[in-house]
Image (cartoon, rainbow over all chains, first blue to last red; front, side):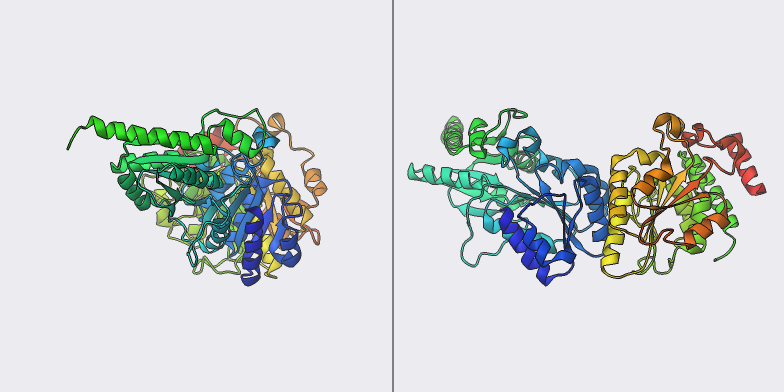
Length: 318
Length: 270
């Protein structure tokens, strides 16, 4: 996703001189092409994320479209108040880009696990929040955010679902994509774990269980219409995110559905419930440990479908 | 110069005293210590146009010590960015004239602050962009001494020095009294000028209440070619009202009743 982002941003920067990239001293070998091709649109701010975000706001308030770039929690949590007071409150054109969402840097340890960012940024007004699930979404989100007004957050993942777009499909920020049709349950995913969810859906389809798979690439603004339709038509909702279960996609879905009175028969949030991970390992390993690998998703999905059947049976004949 | 900056400073202090009294808000001491700096800046140094607050070539002024926002609202109203009548709404229910400066709905305010250690970074970004575009306006950031405790502040100082942002001007309101105690007892900033110099800034030290000295410093920029300039303005917290000067108390206390009358009388006499 990282390379897809940089390649698209380099293209965009050639066409639009307002685009500007600031890095917090990260991106060795990754941003070199951009820096060489567009030196007047590139800045290494050093290991100083708070200052980087303030700088970006200053550049943006004077007309630039500024992407700040770093890894894991550094461009977000380290500069959180600059994001809130400087960028978001002034609706500045600052696009915060974090690579290494979730357990992408699983072996590097807790400091590099970006597992609360969505919840934390979602609480701040005026921020568009995007976590692409596939390479195509990452590229298209990059282009969309460059033209979207105001402050945005782009969470990029090491893993991805390949390219999930249909021929001639148009990416629309804030619109959920339905990647598999099905009426037995809905699996809504955000971020690179989408690839695992699609694998789970395919395995279930082989068993005759038809899951509807939603790629919720944009958490804010949130496409509640598509979600409500899926909830009504399938009656079972399973959310999957490489993030703590509180405040991210699962929390958002729960809040939105309950408040609107669109309540599924069965609902579960797959996400991190274990707190900080002092255990390291690959992204795949840590996912399995937190019950969000393909097998765990399939198991949970079957449980939900059974729960819905039981719930319908309890109601007796109509 | 647009007129008598000393009279403008006096009016800023009177407005701020009334505003903090009516709004029952704090920080009068921190407002009084910058009233002369504000008067000199808005009395002719800053190239701004009240009729066109968004004029692209204007100088930018950022109040980093957002708690002194009442002083900036007062000077903006005096300069005609909005009617002085509006100052009476400061800190009142439903008002957008906030206790800490906010830009929404207030012409002339460039940046909202209130948390310390933010504005120098934003100012550095503004200058970095303007320099790339070959534009010549200046960005002036007014800081408190206490906020120089913030790490993010020094990130910005390091950045601006490294990038030779010579259109960036920091003014430090060095009144030597911070929130709970004197600066030197809290986190001593000395040797202060040397710190800035070692970060590759040009440094000028002035009496922050001497309008001639301030004017000279702010019309001889950059103080060192190819470097950002810091004007260390030695000031007196609470300047202008005898019983408010050099005390921590008046960082927070609101002048009410007899204290308000005495303060107003002193300001009206000057």
